[in-house]
Length: 246
Ligand code: SF4
Ligand code: F3S
Ligand code: FES
Image 1: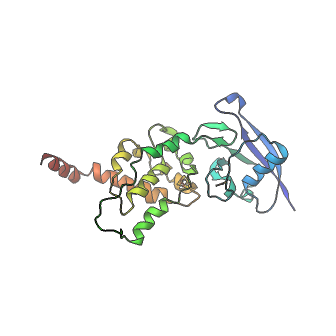
Image 2 (image 1 turned 90 degrees about the horizontal axis):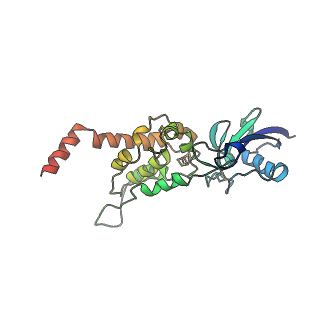
Image 3 (image 1 turned 135 degrees about the vertical axis):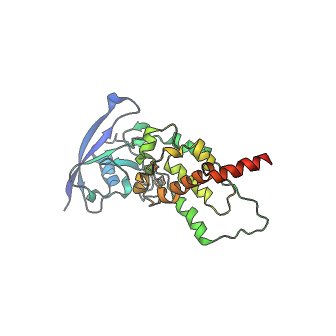
């Protein structure tokens, strides 16, 4: 037998606060339903003007990212059964609002172009040979579906949006840096342009990642250590000075 779930859904257009409001909808909830099913029920039976973004319904495309009861989630992977009482669905607050549950992640996506790309180091012998373990480190970071839930969870982005590229892009830089055949170095970029110093390792990004990528442990902390080693280690600093004089 189904029971009704009350959805409280944010509504509004662009940056016009006069349109902002919350609408409530009672949706019959069957076992196994996810929040996206409830949103589709509202669109098809109760209010066709409700705007939401989705594509795969399988946790693969990253497009249904929202906040549910204040926490970043994918609507298609979040069971309604997790919640007692009213369920509040809102757009991600770290991005400009387009309409209702849809936000604009374009500016963040554009950041990707600033990251120094994968640059194969010159090796005379082909094929390239490297250990499986080295491949796994980089591969874990490349599981990202670009949902931007980690960016939404990050307080450093909310406070320093113009200065910090955020966990998604630190993970991307790290995926290149950790590739065994990469010959570039992104620590200067992360320190000077990426604003990595603004991250204070709260791990909120890691906790919300639907791909269970250990963003903080396996990308951010190693990159921070690399920045410290290369730019603040006194021995490395003296070595560089001497090298320049030669
Ligand atoms: Fe989403 Fe995880 Fe990728 Fe962040 S790292 S964008 S949370 S999949
Ligand atoms: Fe933000 Fe994750 Fe650092 S939440 S502060 S990028 S550990
Ligand atoms: Fe693709 Fe949810 S609809 S991740």
